Image 1 (cartoon, rainbow, N blue to C red):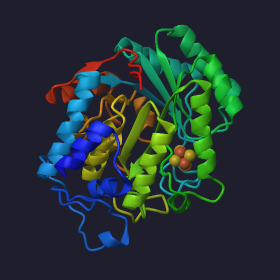
Image 2: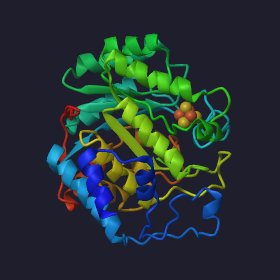
Image 3: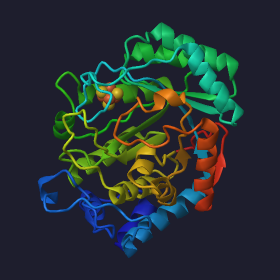
Image 4: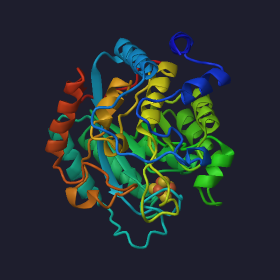
Length: 373
Ligand code: SF4
């Protein structure tokens, strides 16, 4: 594998066959790398130990990615203050814990004043980037979103505003951009048409999602995309198509996290995605896109107590502490057992700084714009 990893570092690319070899090399954690495929059937789901054992090849891949990240961004870890402002969604993605058909979920919405209060708290902690995230909630018309963005922008002109509110028309994206939103996160989730149909109901389409991403780029947003690792029937070939799509899109930010189950979804009997595979992909993405902003996600921290630390040492360079009001955080339940739902924002900030420092990194709270591609 040594030659392949070196080749990926130099060329930022591998052939399809080489990439599949890297994706399927053995792991030292004894997890199934593709846990929700028939081939994984005999593989028992085990609780992972606190200190994980990786193979020499895995260590080499993580170390090479870390080297590249340090060459681009030093030891900086950028902070984005996350405000989860609505858990209503008009869609019904089969894997998602806030999908429309979950009648048992208590729904909430934050008012503009609530959102501004969250931002005020984040600003006080030094954060200069806010991410407004929510389901596709029709209550928030373009006018309401623009009003929120404009108010945030006027109050905090030195801050970057990121939206993560799903698929909209190009016209809507243009309005938000004009109001002051500069960044947009929209994970493509899977770039394989066949796999997309397994994860989504018929009214949603991969081509529309991709079109949204190209529209956002064209308008001038810094764009983030990404995908879940370990979803039902995800094969190495599915992941290969994700990597190829990301090459076509060339996003500024790439968010990946392990798929995590939720009891109120049609996928409730699936296994969680693999930590080792998620880390492997963070490293591969770092080598393919040295400039990218790659988060060590909350899902990674949920699947393992040191998941975010492992993510940072595998090449990630962003963390997204939660600024949402504590009383609502548990209700933004995309998946089960989500961490950081009880802590005050200040406690989250301190915890994240300590985690970054434990790996030799340091927190940077400024806007943290992407380096040139
Ligand atoms: S994944 Fe997003 S669009 Fe799909 S149901 Fe969940 S919040 Fe809605």
